[in-house]
Length: 155
Length: 204
Image 1 (cartoon, each protein chain N blue to C red):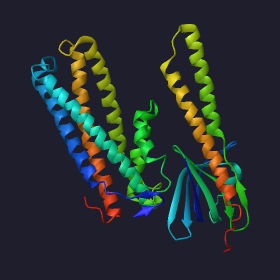
Image 2 (cartoon, one colour):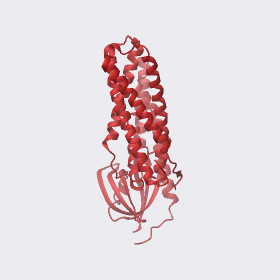
Image 3 (cartoon, each protein chain N blue to C red):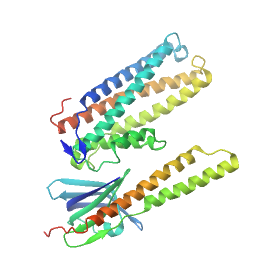
Image 4 (tube, rainbow over the protein chains, first blue to last red):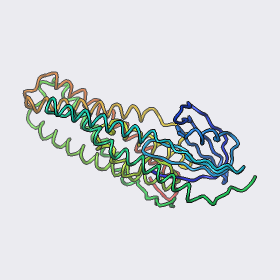
């Protein structure tokens, strides 16, 4: 897991789908203040944040990666907007996998005396997955709060 | 040259060793497959074959160790070159090979991302990786699965008394292994060359 801060302007934001829990972007292309570009591909964002990720938006963007997921959890724009949002979908999915696989293992052991290998592996993997996603969210929140005093310079 | 907490360390020597071992591995697999084809798989387990297979196994272990060391270094080097948004850590990139279920797809994604980040470290996510990486991974997985099946059959029946079907499977696994090893050698060479060109002090 890692969090990053970039300063720049969005040149392109291609949204793939928008759901109740958040949006997925095919790619977001940033023109950084140093003139270089940075692409954030297959990125997720809470809808509050996603709504502000449009071409022309300039300011400071807060990004994260967790395993193979990457997203944008906040922005402080040059026009004064300050938006934070972090979806909990991956944490919830990890918990669901944990509960379902734990039940499967428990019922199998009780009924058959043997645990299915796939459920046992998923049970073991779901625990670090949950904490990794949770820690990423906590770290992202701290990163955004720690930068609370920052105001992007006006254009 | 350093970007953040990562320092670029030339991996040319490790890459060369990995490529040589992969070529040796491919040659031994081709030799095994060629011999089995020439004399028929059912006649394959003659005198000295056990020793040959042991040597081949040891080469494969050595190859795996060197490739994983190179993978760690290549992963750390792209971060030093400016790819600050890579997935996980270089250690996790190696660790994926040993995590059940995740080892079916995460190593492929790691190698693919290292390729993309080596091509354009500062803005790698928009880069395209060659299809050869996916082909390598599918061959690697297929060869590995067939190899495990053959090994289990041979353990059950004994090497010299295994059914002919197992020996034909083994032949198929060897041929797949040849292609997978050659493709991985190609990937290692190209990634190393891209990283070396991004870091002028490196010689490969």
